[in-house]
Each structure stands twice: as structure tokens, then as C-alpha cells.
Image (tube, rainbow, N blue to C red):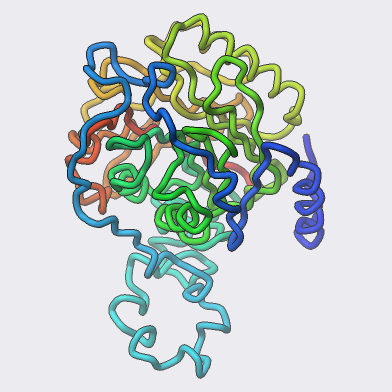
Length: 411
């Protein structure tokens, strides 16, 4: 088992890791400095057949048509549990913030059920580490931990949820879907937003979770990345020899407890199952060479797999547990492509983490084996606000999100 240093020494350990990890291609990002636009990559030729990601029956590979982005994205950042609202001395009656009309007992910010929360955040039983929330329901500040009897619930999500013409999140559909299910760790694909500048990427991440950490691979047309509630203490990318416009993005995440979580974001090729298996074989080699046996491992993203018996999944079985039962939507259906006929998207974890999987609970709904997020069939839609019923059917939205939840020990 990999042992951790006490919290007092972790900042120095993280700095050491980052100094080693920040060679060419590494871009660990922590607030407030989120990198520069120099390493944001470009989106020339966004939608070639190399990265189609589409179903065989669609008329365009990945381009879509110009369409209405829907309502403005509701980031929820006003009451997302930031340090200002965490019950600290900064926000507990100081002259700066004790008695203004903005934050002195208004219905928006004075102990509502939405953010009256964790044990850190002066909370009610609704949001203080219950099985309903357990670290996933209030998208709180960096470092916030909701615990339940010495355990932490962590919601993992695979998200290739870009839409519109540019293989990006500008239209807002995918952002709303992520906001609606409040993940703790997202393994995201086609991680582009507006100009891809540091400030734009920071803005996008903050809409998913205020102050969340992130890593976005550099120099890629359609980058993979990781977004995390918990600190990213090491990150980088491993070369995907089969494709030129992205690699495998990874992050080592300091979750509560003695083990770290290694999250890997992947986007495998559409061209053939043999190419996908070659990518999987390469990634398994990286995992065995770099990830401590005692840490947790999660691989998530767009595998473009036509079936659950594909060779790449058998290859991944060397390092993760791929057995069912699998996540489903509100109607009990597994497929994750646009027509819901193929298992394109996955969250798969090693056996050490799989033993701690628990049902995913959203509002009054329980998904015993995890959720395939299709807003078109999700009822009541209010449970995943601000997501709209039409978001999963947006132009060029070719994938559904996949969510699994784990209750890991803090000891």
C-alpha cells in the first residue's frame, strides 16, 4: 500500500512532483494560475475522419450544424460552497462580510438547504456526509470533504459532451449536464472552450465546480483532461501512438485517506477495433510502469467501442475490473452513443476501488450500478437542474455521460 505524508508536508511533496512532472507535455493546473493560451492547442481540422466519434449512420463525422445553444449556462457559482461561504472566520461576522445585503441572511446565502452543508460548512443532516450527498451534492470549494462514518463518497464521470460545430463546450449543453449531476472527478474529452485561453478554461471549470482543480493536455486539437474537486498533486500525458491530435491525460489526485486516485482520460480511435486494442495495450504498459500498485485507478472516457466484448476491453482487464452490471439510464438502457445502441463510453476502475462502489443517488432517484446520463429520458428533469431535457440531443452531441460512485475509507 502506498503511504501518504501528513498533510503538513503535502504541499512540499506536491511541489516536488510538479517540478518533476512539468516537462514537455505536462501541465498540472491549480487555481488561480491555469496555464496560458500558448499550450491550449488549436482546433484546425476539427472533425476529420481521424476523430469522427460518430455513428456509422450519421451524415457528418463530428461537425454538426450551427444551432441554438439554449439558455445561458447557470454556473451555480454564487452559492457553490466557496471558502467565503464555508463558515470560516472570513465569513463569520467580520466587518467585511457581516451585515451586507449580499451575504447577511438573505434567502440566497443564509443557510438554504442547497448549501447548508458539510461538517466544514455548518451543516444540516441533509448535506453533512449522508448517503444522499457524501461529497457529491453541493459542488463545494477546493479541498472540501464530505465524510460518512470515516468514508468519503466520490462520484466519477466520463464526459465527451461537446456539441455544436467546433468539438467544444461553448454551446453549453455539456456544461449543464455536468452541473446537473455534480461529479467530483471528471475524465473529459474534447476539452475546448471559447478561445481556450487560461481564463476561459478556468471559467469553464468553475462552472462545473467552483475552484476545482484541472489538468488539460497540451498541444492537442481535441485535448483530454481531468477535472477534480480534490487536489491534483501530479499530472501529465502519455503518448498515444495511434493518433496525432490527443494523448492519454492522467492525474494523480489526493483524495481523503491513505491512497491516491489515478484518473486517466482516454479517447480511442473510431477507425477499427484493432487500433483501439493497440491503444489499450500501450496504455496498460504506461499504467504498469508508472502507477503504484497500492493506489486506486480509474480509466474513463470515449472508447468508441461497438460492443462490450471488444478486444480493447479485454486488454484493459489486465489492470481494471470490466465486469458488469453496468450503468443504465432512467429506462434501464446501457448504450452511450447518440442512438443509444453502442457502449462508447466507460468508467472502469481497478479491483481495489471497485469493491467500494455504491449506488449513484441523485435527488430521489437511485441507480444501483451507476448512471448513463441521457437528459432526453431523465425524469424528473428538475433533479439534474440546470440540465435541459434537450441537452443530450443537441447538434453533434454524440455521447452520453457515464457516472459511478464510490465510498472509499479515510483510513
